[in-house]
Length: 106
Image 1 (tube, rainbow, N blue to C red):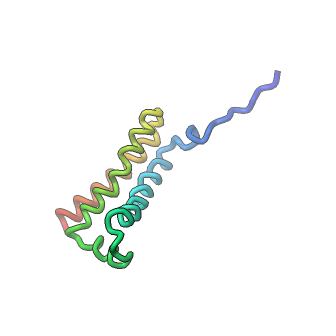
Image 2: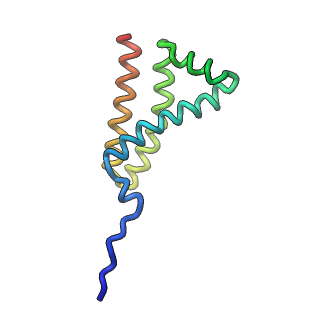
Image 3: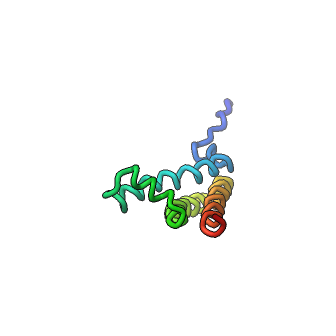
């Protein structure tokens, strides 16, 4: 009898806190670009970035962009990839902490 090597699928390999953390940081950035294309398509990229730098508006941008982490978190939770969920959760907390710092301390 020959033994088959342990085959791990991609999802099993990706179930790491660091990978979830990186995913949780990148997805809101992608949402930032998608949000511009959907809601602010009449603005140029330069105008959009200048408006995003406005400290009164920045917390709203962060809230909208971090929202994308929620369905991804629940999807991986249903798939029982809890280390990935932990990383996404930590990244989301960092974004939310930044939002509160900008909104209330700056």
